[in-house]
Length: 204
Image 1 (cartoon, one colour):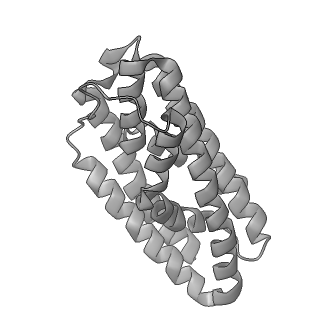
Image 2 (cartoon, rainbow, N blue to C red):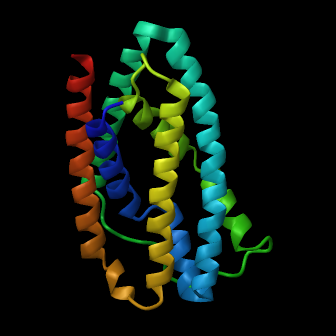
């Protein structure tokens, strides 16, 4: 994996992480209602679940790369198409962040709540299963590459979600519909362009 591809991966991870999704909505709602500590505990729980998902991907994707050979390129093309579809959905988003209302304290604690919310979202595993293969060089150590990309994604998510938790109580205007929609549109356009670029670049 070249430095150019890694930096492209890092930039895309950042853009994806800042778009509010179910995890961010949870962190924002709990930070507004129960304080910054509750939001950060949510973040810690989501990180544990994300680590488990990345562990599954390291084993699964490495096996696929090793056994499927030529057909792995077709998997990458399908993954690129999936990224374009996700980008199109982001372009059409309304920009709403469902963080209103009073959220009761979860019985199992905020850490467990964050863990279960992330683990119950299969879209995360599907997304990274389609996203990470775009940046893997099958001729080199697959496990090392997948692990690096997984840890990078986790690090970006940790920083982004923690920033949401810390700033939510102090700067609620950051989550206006207009600003969220703008972030979503920028990320959507990036995903579409990146998916097309990856499809053509990796097929050459």
